[in-house]
Length: 355
Image (cartoon, rainbow, N blue to C red; front, side, top):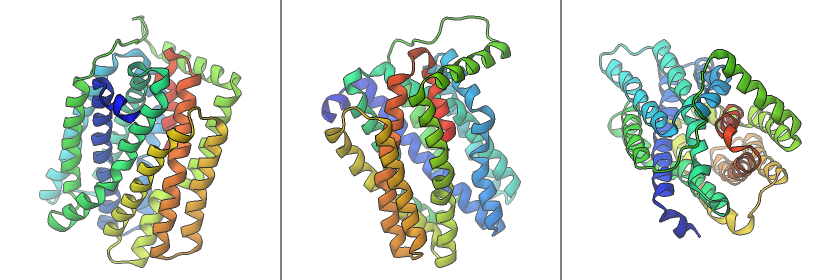
């Protein structure tokens, strides 16, 4: 099953681009939090840095989804990848001139995530165009395995960079991954079903958003999916991404290394879950999403209730089971139920509530 999909060149290049880009995102995501904490020593400022990664999706999220439906997707993805390279490298340059500040770090984080508002829905909208219906679940599983499960490799690279070169060079690797992602995307070939050219304006932009909102409101499964995902992410993501790092900082002097290793444990369980899931479930429903979200929340509750580093690993493994089940169910439902012409904006709705 997986072998057949992997030998499809379009799917293979798509997965490689997503996987290597995800590796860079993981490294830079940790680096922003690590540097924010190192520069300020403040839990509050570290939390604000995490919020800077979320705010763009609230401001530009739906706009990015509409733009993804309007513009040629291949060119857009390449340009967006290339635009992020000088941004992350500027952090490295300022660091060596001893001119890097918390405010500048905050601004760059905001800009990087703003670009992501356009990259993520465009990238997600490509997959249905290069796969058949019967390949969708397996392709989604492989994509999630690479983009989430690449965290298995990140701890080794992170610990090596932290001990050999310092936190800032996580951004150097991130810049390289954007370059490789652009090269892989350039190899993709498919018939782009971007909407026919028409006069684009702010009026048509908001009209498209309102049309999708009206359509989603009339479809109970999509409406409930968005509501449940918002609630789940609101209660789970902040504790998982920020709370875990701050808890480790309280319990260990090696919090950054431990955080990276925990992400690796999480990624390993994600890989196993993603590989096994398509063998048991061919068509996913809202019930599968709720089961996955419940397991995800149970993992966070476990390591919060038993506040100890050893149990953090067990809790992370439980999260690694629940999160991909919920994620794959969400993606499957969106790809299956949303019309082709609205793929970009529906994936951006997913991106908004996912962050």
